[in-house]
Amino acid sequence: MPGKKIRVLIAKPGLDGHDRGAKVVARALRDAGMEVIYTGLRQTPEMIVEAALQEDVDVVGLSILSGAHTTLFPRIVNLLKENGLDGVLVLAGGIIPDEDVPALKELGVRGIFGPGTSTEEIVRFIREEVNPSAGSGHRP
Amino acid sequence: MCDSFGRKSTLRQAQDTARDDMAMELVERLLTGDRRAIARLITTIENDRAEAQEALAALYPHTGRAHIVGVTGAPGTGKSTLVNELAKAYRKRGRTVGIIAVDPTSPFSGGALLGDRIRMRDLSGDQGIFIRSMATRGSLGGLARATADVIKILDAAGYQTIFVETVGAGQAEVDIAKTAHTTIVVEAPGLGDDIQAIKAGITEIADIFVVNKADREGADSTALALEMILDLDHLSHLSSRGHRWRPPICKTIALHGEGVGAVVEAVEEHAAYLRESGNLQRRERERIEGELRSIITQEMARSFFERLDEAQFDSLIDSIIRRELDPYSAAALLLEK
Image (cartoon, rainbow over all chains, first blue to last red; front, side, top):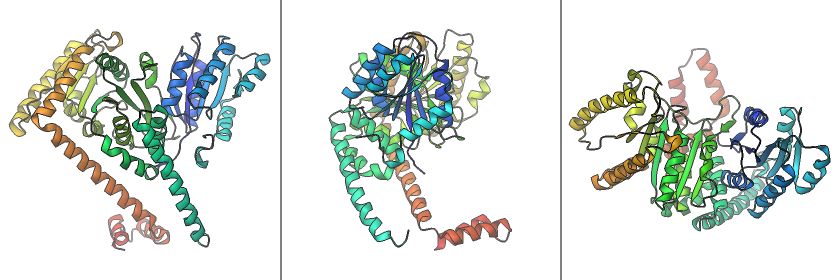
């Protein structure tokens, strides 16, 4: 029986080489029945948005530990908008200082998950925000 | 449910019309090469073929132009890395490239981890390349159910060479040979003795063999084992079916791009062979016949189960459990109606 699947892009922008957290989340989302496209390390904002467009994902999850989120995230969010992907749910994980959270939320990063977040919490958040049974509700 | 049926069907009709309009708009944009439209239509086809049927019908006249190259082989032989290098080589020749990379869906969770893009980061930023990852979604045989339709989409959108990378496949996942014009089977040294290669299946579908990771120990003996199989195959094929094409064996170190040029040459030679020998038309006819048969089988099964009397179905199962009836007789009873 065909059915809709939640598709998630997990990407690591920036130059840090630590992708353990990203892999743990990717695996957890797979186990929750989602299709996870994992793109690997050191992705530029352009690469991430191009992959999101081609893969037609519902969610982009960004993992960053290098502290470069204040420059990279605005660029990614703007590129998503430029490509007509403003309906895509953008999530962030990794090391993000509390004082940066309001600015990122303002930017449109809807979920921010720091160290110690359970994977169940991330799964629940995605399921609540993306409702594919309602005919791709997040889309224009 | 039953009392609201009339209202529901009117609503359904209105929804159908709106859906078709949206699909047709996507087709128009797709034919101009709009990448977002391509991506959206692929999703529609993956999720629900009925919804995409009008769109597929509209774009079908624009298909049949691309050369489809299948890339298959055991997990870890370097399929994605090879596709990455082949795509770069074809771009240098000025051809546009579509890539469909299939990975398995977990039979337990229904989810999938699609990781082929990791090896294709070189291709990012090139508007002449479109990469799509697909999960098998329960389909066996190394491809997803919708892969053939996704090929049609990329073909209609104007991609000239389309690579289809199968799931890590071993011995029975041979659907790719029915789908592709040219099938590349990727081997790597050290994956088993030469009996593995003689058994059946995947070695029989190769139009081109690639022994990747050729800098590793055992590459020569892998190539030699393949040569030996080809000697046997070639003799038996020559006598039975008059084949003229003997699959070349290319050694590559895909990670460094070494030997990839020879693979491109082999693909081009095979394409020319298909055209000149008349095998292209023969394969096309076989492929379409297979596709038509499988669509009819699916549609008949679907319409049968839609009209199924669930109560009778359940009671027949009970009879089978009690050994009063066998499954074949029960199926015959249901199909009679």
